[in-house]
Image (cartoon, rainbow, N blue to C red; front, side):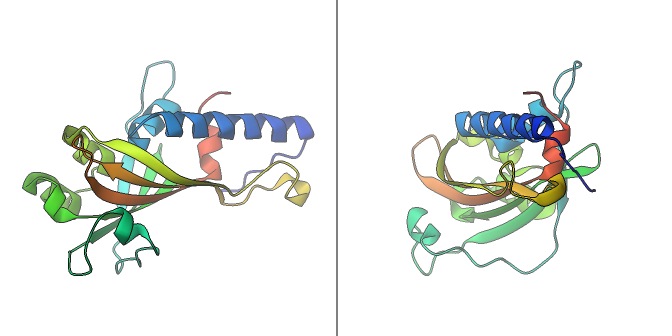
Length: 183
């Protein structure tokens, strides 16, 4: 999917829309819930579809094991998915999580279903601690107005209601996310 924002006005509009999405993501614990509202229309939220990637575990970025409070011998599971709206990928998410810190039924669902991570662990009453926001696109960066495939990335730690961290996540939002939402 090619997405061009050739005029200055179109780039400004896309930038405002991306900033609005970022503010909403920062304000809530579940990116899935934000995306369901973002991709929805006048009829309300739109259910996010998930496509799991079957591939070897990604390497846990440096420092995240420590932020999770996980010892070198503690098992950390990995899950990578594409989050889709209307058949279009709006986000790629990588989750590293401590299976021992979630309920057995949650662990089973994370391993064997295509449910979004946030929906599976919702009963934990989790909070999100954003570690980093990377703007992968800004107006005027690309000649001809062609947007890069990835436009925004969040890195965060998810904490249970008792404050204990259980997951590290890196979410990369695609240019397709700008086809939804309003500024």
